[in-house]
Length: 347
Image (cartoon, rainbow, N blue to C red):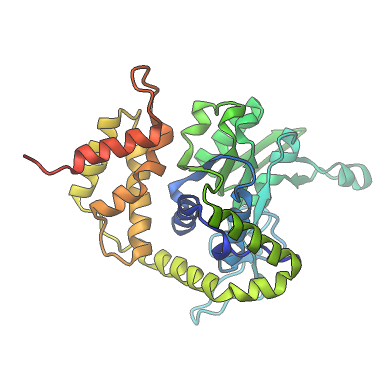
């Protein structure tokens, strides 16, 4: 298996790296939308993070990679591995890497959701389900490049699955329901078209990436990429210690997450910020608080504070703002201005 470019070796792009790390700590935050220039390490960052995450335990032979302690799909309910009182996992489960699945723009609906296994139907006369990309992405990442160019029928499908965490296929005499919980990562160039509001709202966080604008950064990017391509093994080994540190911090944050308290004043600050910005609905409030809790867990804090909310506010809210014809400033600037007004000392 080819080596993946180390996550820690990615130059700059701190907001993007922070966003996908937070969703690794708490997937309920939702997906990450990455808009910006081509060739800025969007797909590299996603694959690199998935590669450094601890392997997950899955039922052997399950096409959906079900967790043996919570196997829900029809294929493995009867053969799910169980954990004994001594904590030993039975031989029916094994460790697998966190999946990263690409959803191509030209993919058919059958390829995405799954369809009748024609080979078995013709050779054996058996109606069997052939899982699609959503099945492979379960418990991992579904990556869509140029997500703003995705066909409308696939957008509608993804909205339904992202909301329910389940893929339901009823066609050609088949009726299949299987788990499809994944972190949706979408990337694109805003100059090539806008994303439909329904799908835009399903992304928990949104970040903007730009081509490095300093000579030192550009040189360092080229230098590291060239070193990786010349000797992937040696370059990966060089960054192993730093990647291990990131892995340990994510694992520790996951364990702390449930114990991080969210004071009422933190919820009030989040609500005030969303009201000031005029975000529709309450998904912005929820995402902001969840992201701040993950950030607090990552920093080892026992409760969510204002600094954690401020740290994640732009990524949680910038894509939820209505257009203001009287304000031509960017969404990030509007969030920063609202934060400055909220945190300003009272006279």
